[in-house]
Amino acid sequence: MRVTILGAAKSGLAAADLAVRNGETVFVSDAKPLDKASAAADFFASRNIASEFGGHTDLATKADLIIVSPGVPPTSPVRVEAERLGIEVIGELEYASRFLTNPIVAITGTNGKTTTTALTAHVLNEGGRPAVAAGNIGTPLSSLVGTIDSSTIIVAECSSYQLDTTRTFRPNVSMVLNITPDHLSYHGSFQQYVHAKWKIAEYQRANDVVVLNADDAHAANAASVARGMVRYFSLLTEVDGAFVRGDEIILRDQQHNEEILMPLRRLGLPGAHNAANSMAAALAARAFEVRNENIRDSLASFNGVEHRLEHVRVHRGVRYVNDSKATNINAAWFALSSYDHPIVWVAGGRGDNNDYSTLDDLVAENVKAIVCMGEDADAIFNHWCTTKRCVKVASMEEAVHAAADLARAEDVVLFSPACKSFDMFANFEERGRAFKAAANGL
Image 1: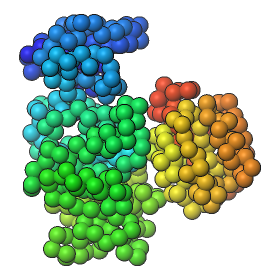
Image 2: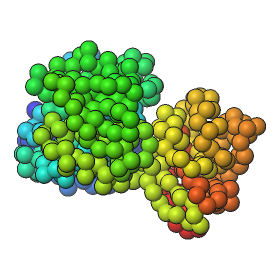
Image 3: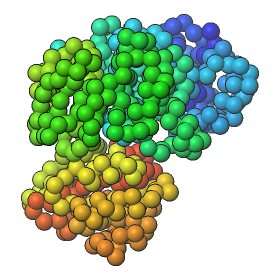
């Protein structure tokens, strides 16, 4: 088979390598100029894989199958032409799944999917069910084909980009955490974005499990396309699955038998949203018959993932938290609701037509001062400067020093940008590392 890989980022490299291992004739096409993709070009040359950089020529559509990287939108001319020619276009997630026999837990949501993916893998491993976190969290599924034991459970973080190009992807457990508007320029509309998320459950079978957030209408409505057994989690109401009663997490099975899992205060991660994530992870673990005692202990011991409400240090009684992965308003909302102590909020970056008014109530109640940075610094400053102490800064180091000056013992300096990173940094990881370096340098 002739296979074209569109995009030479991490998932494209892994897909190309798998296709070569499968004996296919592989061609890679990337829009980036060669001088910005030299490492990828060297990788392909070392494996005798033909490639082109700086744009997509007609060679890209001389294929029986096209594997598209998440960053290549449906409106890309090369994708439009491929579909006109009747060439099958799929993503790396779909391609890899066709060669995997491992059990799969697939997790999607606008916010919280990285944390929940890592948490679910942690709970499974601690419960005696070997698991590996993969997918959008960093390890492409293609790199796992033929390299891990077939009994190892793959816990896959799945973005809407990846799910949009699935055709047969069938996880044993699927999970939809929440759905709020995001990536609309890629999907074209919110409804298209919702349907991309729902595809995580579309190809399951009757004995598979679907875990849905009952408190989020768009996530809960994935039940309308689900083929598996639906289990819900909720902070607000009692459901078949996992819910909160008083200050305890309760598990209820389909026969309505109930068991107390654990007190909320024992969870290792702060915030109501992480209580929801923990319940979702618990339901996934129960689907693999992990004992409640093991789930309880592992939920209590989990400390989170890098760049997501990551504890950096305590300096002069002030706690510094890196939440660089909060690239939109909704993610920042979760962060601002996670702490009982006054917050000095460091925010800003490249806004995405952000409506900051949705954060007004939380800011009024939880935030004592705001440090504004990046392209949206003026927008953030102008929105809150009449009600909160606001400071504008030009760099990350200046932001951290300004926050340190504003904070007092027992306060939290929370870096939760609510914006994309691309105005000042290559990605949110680089941005988060910059915050941590500045905080540790105080």
